[in-house]
Image (cartoon, rainbow, N blue to C red; front, side, top):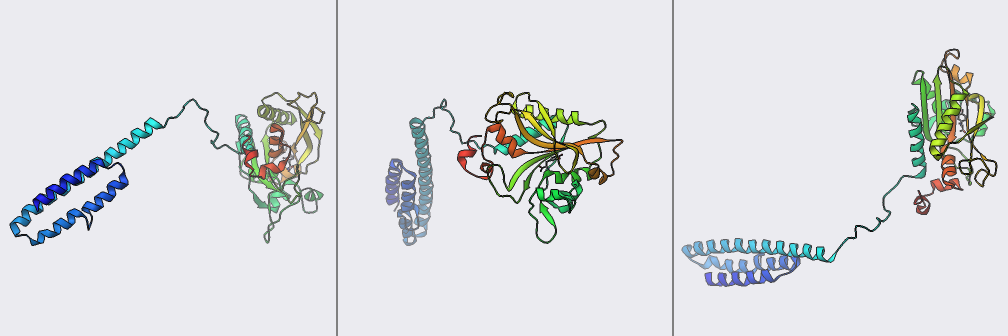
Length: 339
Ligand code: DAH
């Protein structure tokens, strides 16, 4: 029996060393050591031997199994090593090739929002996040738009069933929150998503982004407002722009203004983007209305203030020459890849 085993060992080792794949190696291992494997079958004959022989042959068989197992492991390692060497020899990477553009990047709205936040942070502002669902009171009454006010019709509202809550139609709905939770001096901007029940076209969306700004401090006036907006826009366009104010109506400010800025693309000479006027109409602002301030019990003799609000989507459209507001909500990769 020992002879049989010695022969088996010799043949097995020779065969293992000639195997070149891991799969074949596993198959052969089963063939040899598995339940019905060659070695197992030989060892079944042990039961016919006398106790002394049984012990000798048994011991021999165990050592033989260990040896074969070792040879299997060694060959497995050799095969693996060979595979790595082959791969290294046949595959190569040209590190000088440009990297394919698979790096993810932020949506243009997010990119510009972060730029806007950076500028205001540098000017000492705090950044708040607006609430997408708010009360009728915050969205309208607290900013001087009572039920009977025609200004409620200026913004078509999504009303939520049952509780009188609304989807924020404007980030101005956050003014109340900011003033209730802070004491002056206050410098805050509130970027956020707002919703209007609008028919959608190239310049109207039912879902878009605004940025609200609010400042309450001593000796604050229109000049500060003008400086602030000019600084932000110059930062966003990487170019000094000038600001123009025209009277404008917004219920929460008095006086209210519309702010235009000099076209950064033609430096005010007139081009396609500014429709040959040299100016781009941009946003609303003003000194906070006394009715709004009464809500918070602030004394107009002690403090002064301004507020402003603009459409972030519009800023991004101007910056990148995007002709249609509907692109922002559209997950078309051809649009998104450009930023
Ligand atoms: N809430 C206005 C809008 O939705 C924007 C705005 C205008 C905000 C004037 C203001 C402001 O704070 O003073 O178009």
